[in-house]
Length: 124
Figure 1 (cartoon, one colour):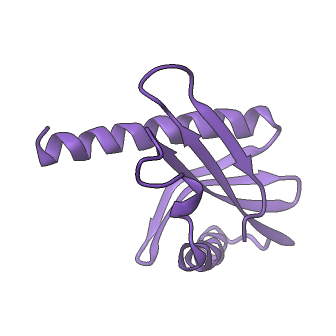
Figure 2 (cartoon, rainbow, N blue to C red):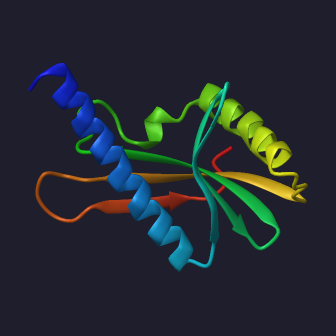
């Protein structure tokens, strides 16, 4: 597989995971506010509201755990950046949520069998 085919494959896997995560979270009662919001500091995969809580959700999708689990891809630096991005999103949208939470949706999409989705609320 060429580099561009590999990048396209990873992008398609990521988009699949974000769609699956959004459907799952909305089915749990959350309200989707934004997808793939970007600023000069980075990107938020999903922005949701759960009651009065602003939820910034990182979605990590893997086809295998050969290079680590989706959970392992979210380190302290990533969590700090997501908290900063939550503030930037709120400022850009002129909202002042009483609480902000960072969630992770970890998805394993094996070559065979169903995807496995885990929602971890309040990862950092």
